[in-house]
Amino acid sequence: MSLLHSTIFGDSGRDLLILHGFLGMSDNWKSHAKNWMALGYRVHLIDQRNHGRSFWSSSFSYEVMAEDVVNYCETHRLEKVLLLGHSMGGKTVMQVACSYPELVQAFVVADIAPKVYMPHHQQILKGLSELNFDQIKDRAEADAQLAKTVSEVAIRQFLLKNLYWVTNGKLGLRINIDVLKNASEAIGATLSDGSHATHPCLFVKGGVSDYILDADTPVIKHFFPNAEQVTIPGAGHWLHAEKPILFFETVTRWLESKG
Image (cartoon, rainbow, N blue to C red; front, side, top):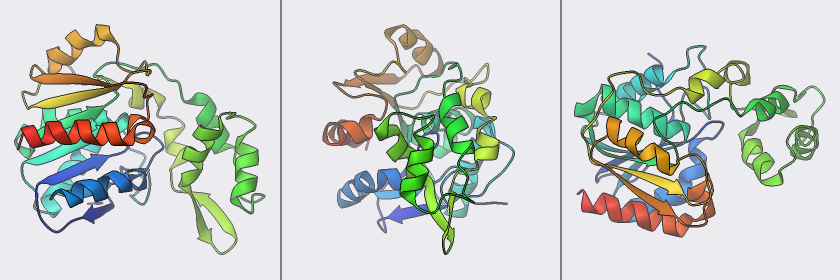
């Protein structure tokens, strides 16, 4: 059994597992993890399969990613955990809650709904898959090459956090681009028919993001009848990075109310 890579902040307290979004990694959440650790939580920053320092696999679906979380919890002897997932990580969290309800105490979903999303990462995936690491010798060259297909500087900076030195003088990506470039349908998939969970849960929407719409409220309530919703004003899809203080305070206040 392959086990997800994690960095754990804290030695005791309520276990809070954080799952990043598509093409992200656990490192994106370090600042928040340190802040929750200071409040007495034991925070598990987890790399999902084909991302970060976790294992690569040709199998890629929310069902198998939920199993990964269960295996992680069993290995670390965790029970009644708190889950927080952003985007793709939010879909994984929803699947865990539906398929393994006894494992979860409560969960938070950041800017994603339990619905089908049409593929919309094709240009980014094309750019990443065309990076030629036989030619690229440093991060600046990688950025210049990626700029041919991804014009937004902030998005390139986010994507290029996946760069690492494979060997001295040889760069590579921590994401399994060969699998992920063909995973658009899997990433956009909704929950399976009959999925349902009654845990306390919070859906956090970015105020200027279109990932969760007002029309999605009945869908959220269909799967999760005890769901609450809150909006972070002025935040886009990466709400935890764009409005970090407000996001942290909002989620913390809700988690503390469920303690």
